[in-house]
Structures are given as structure tokens and as C-alpha cells.
Amino acid sequence: MKKPPVLVVDDFASMRNVVIAVLKRAGFTEFIQAGNGVAALQCLAANPKIGFVISDWYMPEMDGLQLLQAIKADPKTQSIPVLMLTAEGLQQNVLCAVQSGAAAYLVKPFSPAVLEERVRGLFPG
Image (cartoon, rainbow, N blue to C red; front, top):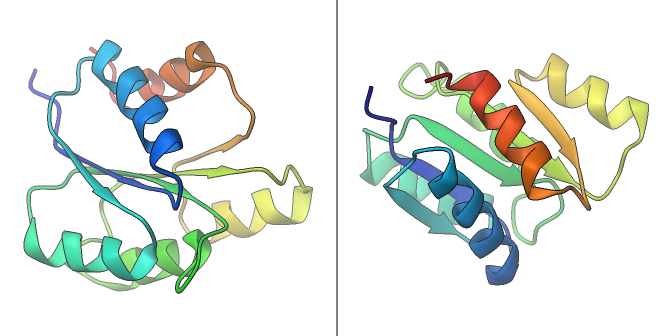
């Protein structure tokens, strides 16, 4: 089964590269990158085939939570699973992300194996 294109959103290119390397091991082949939520929304509008979003929480211009809320508020994108990444493991942040529609949540630093396991849970096969 072909995996959908993935939008990887983080203000650090090095973190986007780590995430993409893990996604490749999980069988994903198409990637689009954005450095913040504003750019991510532009990518989503321009690429209707995006089927998965992995986003950092803390970014300039528009953070990951605002991006998540915008994705879930738009009928064209609300069904796309969003995995949130953050340096904050606060219970209230996890709860806020889940209540806003996040499919999964991962606290940095994480091992590539844990990210791969979480992604495979969302996209088995």
C-alpha cells in the first residue's frame, strides 16, 4: 500500500531531516517541508494529496498548535492525521493537542525507533 505524501513542519532543517530519514525507513517516499505553520498551510493548499503532517509545536509566525487547529477547522484538511512533536512534555500540552485533534504526540528528544513505531501505528503496513 502506497503511503501518502508527508508534510514535515519544523523551524530547524536538521530536525526535518531526522524526521524524513525515519519516515523513509517506515516506507514513505514523498516529502514536503515547511519552516512554520504559515508556510505549512500554504503547502497544504498547494498540495491536496498530502495525507500526513508531522509538526513541531514551537515555531515562529504560527506554532504547531495553531497549525493543528487550522488543519482540523478546514473541511478539506480535517481528516489528515497530525503527529505533534515538542520539547515540552507537560500534561496540559498533551491534553490540548489531543483535544485539538492530534493523532499522536511525541516529546523531544525522541529516538528514531520511537518515532518510527508511532508512525507505523498510524500507517500500518
